[in-house]
Image 1 (cartoon, helix red, strand yellow):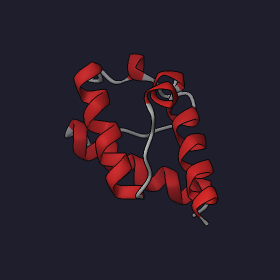
Image 2 (tube, helix red, strand yellow):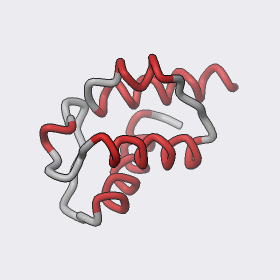
Image 3 (tube, rainbow, N blue to C red):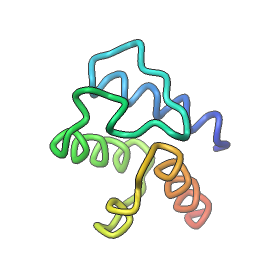
Length: 83
């Protein structure tokens, strides 16, 4: 999976979780950019992303994710490590 494909899937996940078809993610998108993105929604996103991509994040990784670009980097690294 390349970065563009990853972002397509992430866009779909975010749109479904926030029930907002207008969401267009960029590397810089953060919780400050999406009104309903609070700590509970962060958990929902992480769970959905882990299930969709078949990856697991530890708490340190989640805490290091400052924006969607960093989230994408973590996902891509995990997918590559998995082979």
